[in-house]
Every structure is written in structure tokens, then in C-alpha cells.
Image 1 (cartoon, rainbow, N blue to C red):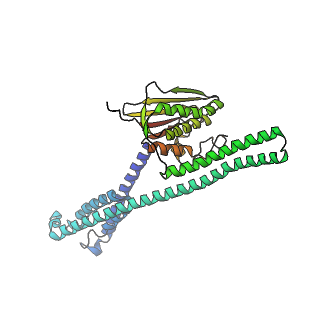
Image 2: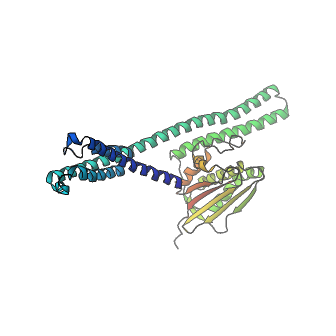
Image 3: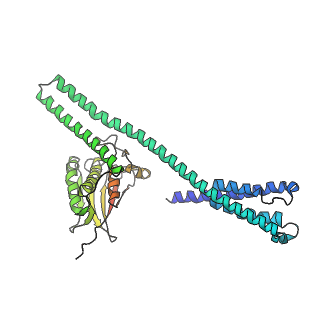
Length: 363
């Protein structure tokens, strides 16, 4: 953040320096043309400096160029013969005021043009990012679907070649069941994401105890956590923590986060889930693991659709990378926030979900 501010401040200074150079260049040109122009149009060429400053720097540098041009132009080309007495002549005052009005107009137009250019550049950036995301999505979807289909094809071949071998039939049936379950999860994620992103999913908000939501999420994620041999630590407190929310959707949020922590932590790792109300009428749910971690510069991207964690490609539990995008949308729809932190790859991660506490029930 500080680097971004420093870069912005540096760019602003460059814009003002450019305005200064433009004014001095225009003054030099006006001085060279002075034998031809004399006292005619003392500010005319200086308008070019304002145009340059407005085009590249926007409103502020253009105003700076206007004021600087007015001061220098008045000193050198208006009050040259009888000092500043010439400046107070009606014609000279009129020309100066007109020049400043023109400069202000150019500055306003330049400011709007610069804003429009920035908005256009941001739109182009977003379109390119969307294009890349679409390409990545298609590649990811094709890759994730191909693996189960390949396994299903293998199971089909086994059943075709040895239909009477009970052991092989059992193996093939279990394989088919696992792959169909995986494809069903992917299809459900796609349907869920489509509805969530378009706002076409319904919430059933009620006063609920967030501890019960977390307990249900732990039940859903328990088999995977147990399978990976993780040590699970929970600190949910003893008192009810009520929020206004949809139980099923919030269970989906925390089960997804717990599954991610389990998937991307090496066997025998540690996963910690804690619940803490704050003094600001909010409650914070924090999920910590000592898994693969994340690169700090890529953390926010993980909440975008089809984004994959660094170890997803080699993880047998990997999916389409839709879970965190769905999580963020559901949490934001509940008026909350979800953030991720990590010291770096291999150093674990922390996911924090903040929700608003329900108002106390009137006595």
C-alpha cells in the first residue's frame, strides 16, 4: 500500500514538473517570436503549455501552468515598457482575465479527459483479466473433467473384460462412485457460482447461534480432517453468539474453508478454529493452519473464480477453484467480510471471517 502511494505521489510530481517544462518551453518560443509579435497575443503561445499540462497531468497541473503562465507572461510581455502600470490598463486586464478563463476551461476539460482515460484503461485491464480468467476457466474445467472421465473409462474397461470377477467389479464400482461424486461436486459448484454471482440465490436469514453453524461445518469436514490425520483445535466459547444469517449458507462457507485447510495441509498438520465476539458488535471466526501457505502478492486472487492454490495441481482433493469465490459472495451478502493472510509459501495461512452480531432482543 505504501509503495502504491509513493508511486502515485511520484507520478503527480512528474506531472507538475512536465507542466513547468511546458510553460518554460512556451515562454522560450514566445521570446524568440517577440520581434515578430511584439505586444500582440502575449498569452497565445502559452495556451499550448496549458493544453500539454492538461492532457498529460489533468486538472491540477493545468491550473498550475495557467497561474505560472499568467505570472510570467504578465511580467515579460505586458509590463515591459512602463512597468506594471501597463497591466492595469483595461485591455491588458481583459486579456489576462480571458487567458485565465481559457486556462481554467482547458484544465477542467483536461481533468475529465484524464479521468476518462484512466477509466478506459481500467476497463481494458478488467476485460483482459476477464479474458484470461475465461481461458483459465476453460482449461481448468477441461483438465478437471478429463481426469474423472479417464478413470470412468478405465472402470468401464475393467467391467467389460472381467464382468464375473467380483473383486474387480467391486473396485470398479467404488471408483465410479468416487468419480461421479467428484463430477457432481464440480457441477454443483458451477451452478452455485452462477447463481451466487448473479444474486439469484435466496437467503433465509434468522437469528442463529454461530457456534452451532461451526459445529455443523466441523461435522461435514470431519471425515477429511480425520483422513489426513490433522490435529484439530477448536475454541468456540461457552456463550451463544447470535448472528442474523442463513444457516445452510453459512455452514457451506465454513465447511468449505475447513475443507481447504485440510486439503492444503500436509498429513499430520494442525488446524485451529476459533470464535471471538469483538467490542464493535462483530464476531470474528478465524481459521489457522500450518499448510502450504500463499504468496502474499497472490492472496486476493484466490477469491476470484477458478483461482487455484499453489499446490492445487498436485492435490488429489483439488477442484475447480470456485469455493473461495462462493465463500466471499455469501459472506458479503450477509454483510460481512472474509480475508486471507499468509507469511509465505510453506508457512501456513489464516482465514478470517467477520460477521455482524444480531441486535439484542428487547426485554
